[in-house]
Length: 289
Image (tube, one colour):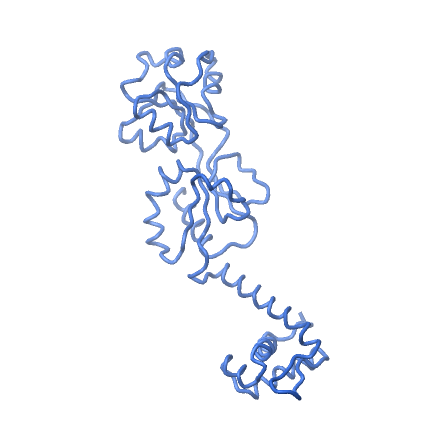
């Protein structure tokens, strides 16, 4: 640290190089020309080289000054960006969040007004649709996802664990509430999930029906809507199913649950975070406490 010149000297040098004039630099920094001249002279003595040729007007940078100036400008840019990211200039870029459409539509959208009321200065950019998967994870500030909590290079915060429930419209509930009856009913499958119908039947030691699921969807909310329309039985996390269970649109098909190895997590890249990102993280964690 003893080798670093004072920040005020560097600021005087950068302003003088930009304006090529001590008087103009002084006006820009709110100082006197004598103060700027003194600080630049002190910097030159500290470095052991002249930075300006004072024989010409406007002043010209020496060769050493030309070499040094880009490093000073870059250093100020890094400090400025770090200050903005950590402490938050309110007009910074939005916090980039990616989550499943089901999470956004069933849970997040209904609570965003509360966040906006608490943090009106924080801008959010929500990625849930077709293009969301095209964004590299490192370009995101926050991601809400299901998994085992192990994402290298990312900090993972546990939010909630819920069992997987078989669900149907009340009039489609199996009369005897048995797995054998359920095996004969139309099933709605969510594509690509680990907690699927085959695993559920295997857990209960019941042979998986020979017929393929009647319908397939790529999101939990689509499966829930299909089930609420009477198109079949869906196997969905209780977290997503709660609004449908609460208003009676859906009930459990059978009084059994699928034990899941996955839970809901919030992740963010390791390292410093912006003011807006930290605000959203704190708010999400508070919602799930």
